[in-house]
Length: 258
Image (cartoon, rainbow, N blue to C red; front, side, top):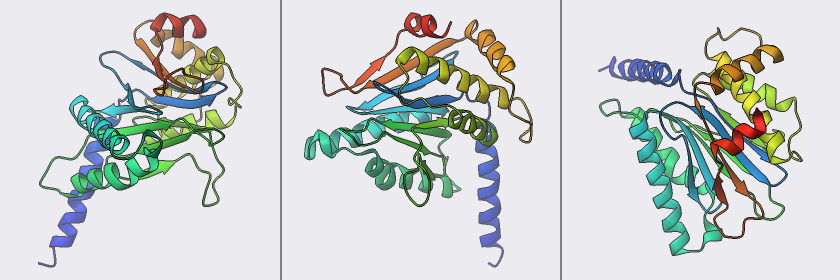
């Protein structure tokens, strides 16, 4: 009996290692605020990675396609139910993540006799009026990280995810070096593309490797633009409808970052 807690802890550690290994190749996703709203950007080869959830909420995810779809549909159902029962203005990303999605992910991760979710999610919520945008990273174990603004953390108008933690760290460092809140869409796309390239390069190096130089980042981006699809979407402040989500065409994105 005394060995049972140890076995559970060991099983959790093994499960975490397995999930991190499965997520490691995942293409990074970048989200950032710009002058007219917020932008989500990634490169992909096979499947969609950026989705609309509700009027002012979007989602980007890496992981197993089946798990991403289950979580996407759950998020849509929760947001739609809240909006129908109360109002669209009552649908809040923090409540959606803290009270519904995070507990479900944590329970699946810690129940070692059932399958966990192989997913890492990045939510973005367009701020209403003068309220700031919210970027929220939700992991397979239910852990949440937001873009600051409380508990002594400076507010950051961006969010990123990648398959490895040191890639996330390098992308965040790259974003902190550049102001972007007043950029137009074309400039925001170029910044997002460079940040994606920084994170994607980090996936193939050791965690203690230095951040790549700008020329290497640019060359890596050109190489992958030739062999992958660009996926990007915006949540627009001045959208004519309550739904602010707009998927950008590949031609529109490539014209800006070429």
